Image 1 (cartoon, one colour):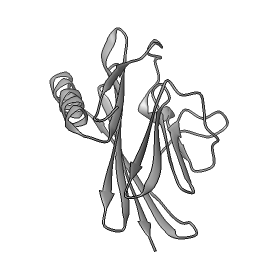
Image 2: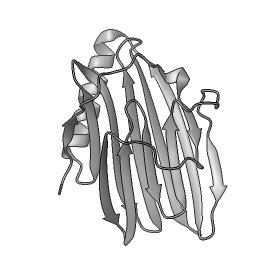
Image 3: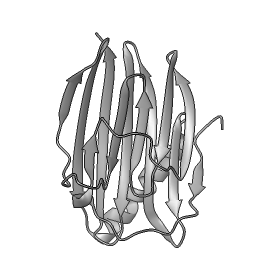
Image 4: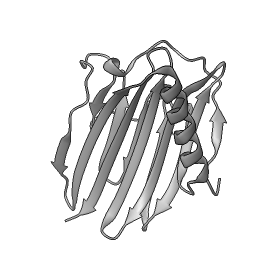
Length: 166
């Protein structure tokens, strides 16, 4: 896969919502619906779509945003130091009206389609249920963005992560 690509997932969309997502840096690899391995700025990156959630593995980072058993839902901004890295994660949840939601989902799909280092999954029968990821090189590290869309509530969870060498 040289550029971005939409993958129609073989799994039906489950009725989850933004409030059920939680964040972890300690989860092992979970069963992924689709995976993309990249090399960005000399660093191996793995983007993983897990249904209505994602994992990004980069060096010491094992970022998971998912409905995790035993972990209460909610996404909080996080900063953590790893051996040679500073990690910063932020998330926001938007609730939109139906027309704005559809337009934003289309915007996410276009942005991801045009991005050379991206991955996104579309659920069968729920074209507005999307999990999308992009990763970008920075002078001293990497940035990645993710989007999780929830058509039943017209909500979008957008995350931004920066990993910089210290």
